[in-house]
Amino acid sequence: MSGSSQKAAALLEAARTRGLHIATAESCTGGLVSAALTDIPGSSDVFDRGFVTYSYPSKTALLGVSPELLAAHGAVSEEVARAMAAGALARSGADLAIATTGVAGPGGSEEKPEGLVWFGIALKGEVRAEKREFGPLGRAEVRAATVETALELALQALGRAP
Figure 1 (spheres, rainbow, N blue to C red):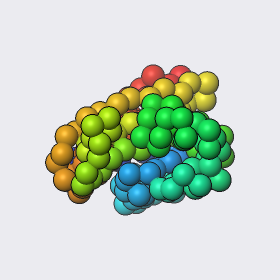
Figure 2 (cartoon, helix red, strand yellow; figure 1 turned 90 degrees about the horizontal axis):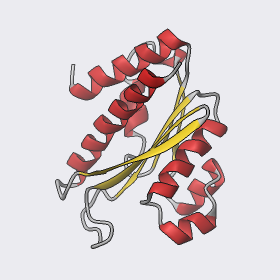
Figure 3 (cartoon, one colour; figure 1 turned 180 degrees about the horizontal axis):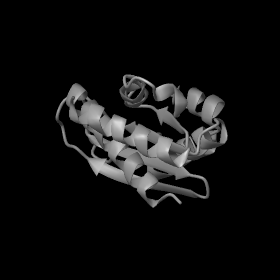
Figure 4 (cartoon, helix red, strand yellow; figure 1 turned 90 degrees about the vertical axis):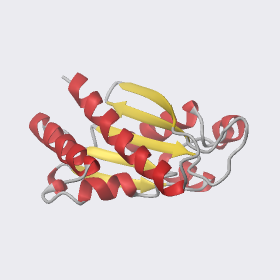
C-alpha cells in the first residue's frame, strides 16, 4: 500500500470512528485527493463528495468563493484556500473539508512559483490554511506531494476534533 493509500485509509478510519463525513475542494489536484479516498473500499460511508473547481467561475458557482476575493488575491492564496474549504463544508453533508489550490507547473511566477500550494482545512466552527512550497519538482510530483499533504493535514485536523 502506497503512502497516500495508507494515509487515505487512516483518514477514513479516523472519520468513521468519530462518525464524521469528508468533502474535498480541489483545484491543482483535479480530483486526486477524492480519488485517493475513494480508492479505499468502503469509503462511501465516510466520503461525502468532491468538488473539482479548476476555474474561477467554478470556484464561485460550486463553492461560493467571491469573485472579488479571487480578483484581489488570486486562486493560489491563503484567502481562497480558506474560502474553498469553508464553501465545501457549507455545500455538502460533510464535517471536514480539505481544499487544495496551487501551482503544479510547469511555470509559475516570482510571487507564486511552481510548487506553491495552499491548503484549506475546515471543521465545523474552524477554518484554517496551510502553505507548502514543494519547489519545481514537475507537475506530477507536485500533485502527488499535494495529495499526500492534504491527507496528512486532514488526519491531523481529525486528531483535534472532539
